[in-house]
Length: 457
Image (cartoon, rainbow, N blue to C red):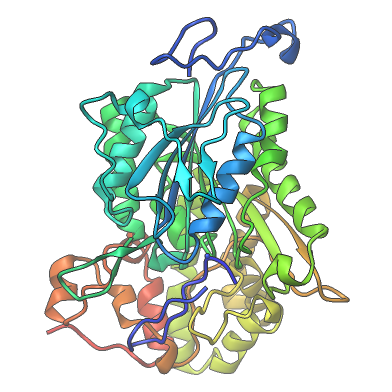
């Protein structure tokens, strides 16, 4: 299956899985055809988009990355829509390359393993060296956003992070880049990703309309909270994303036909195209996965949602300590209604947040107010759709998960580290610094619930 990080808790990690303004030229590229006026209403101003796709394919997904770029080529940059990609592969092409995905352009010859990039056009002759960039380095991501915005300024921006995903644990693994600190494959932690985007936005003077993850398991409150001030919306999946990834050609067709559509409308097209594509895929098309999901999240609501989760966590800890709340009931509430998410109690303990809260609220009056708030916010701010390949439905989800293992041997103690110094003192350098962990009590509840807290001396 694609874009899944497979881990053993507290043990060695294993990896398996997967613009221009109208009439103005930008760095030699124009994305405005003759029929611009036909694609927008008479009273609407033309809107331009730049979609930036960060393809971290220096791993076992390199072919899939190229296939998705070929999907984008089938539509191309036109009618105010610009598509820019930075693509790294493991063995296909030497170095890391920039692409402006134009109309009727072919950048790849997979038989000859050759690529025809736009590095000089985007970077200029002095900046094009075709070096192998580390896609797990936040400096690379920051540079990508800054250069893309300078090359193709637009009214609206969408950043897509493409690769393996591990939820709160990170995204975009680069197999050619091994970290000196711990000898592990480099990746972007969620904290690093947010810091890189923040720095790029401040430097370029822009704000993302959408941050998207064509990567597994990223639709978590921990991730959404980290990006709450960096984009209006996040689009991601609570489950795995099969090898084929998003259906880029389907939603890009709609966007270039009407670039003035609202951001929520575009998100609907991305989700609908994705579900439509996998509705026709079975067997190998889904990579053995029972189904797929995709969610859009209104990030303006995430702080209120985190506050409700924070309040719930204190009441859960108090209830567990007094005996009022049963551990078994907590496990049942989060696991029983989402079994085919296949995450709870495993290495990826990512149950559905709203469904778990709803069941708990029905069990205990002391938890009902916070649970009702969580359910209400998720219902209003998260749009999720899915397709199941299992008779009777493989799973149910409201589109947003949270980290909650049920036993110590599934728990990442490093989930709670707030600083690099704290992690280093404990001999763990693999993760630290989630805003959600710093700002809420949920991590303390998780480690208390799992009876696995190891204090840092």
